[in-house]
Length: 117
Image (tube, rainbow, N blue to C red; front, side):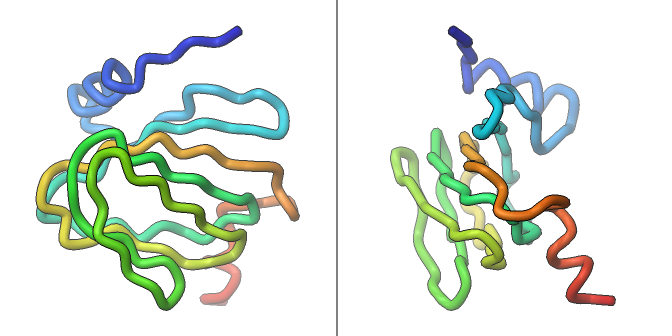
């Protein structure tokens, strides 16, 4: 069993001025905590994994492909592999728990970079 306090990790991220931290690597599943400060925009690289965002706190908007969603605490957003997605219009710092499913291809963080070449 593994136990992680998302609010404690978010507080540590803020103190260290860091936006993301992996908190669990359980084989096919990886969990990260992410924070997105107010007044910023946070483009996310498309990944080769399925992603599930759980909004722990905060509010703003998330664009996934051609769809835009208003976000607030308690929301869950699923992002299919390969889709570009961006947090924006962040009103109150957004803290998320991000669950990555099994990768459909290696080098998951390189999709956007490969397109720009």
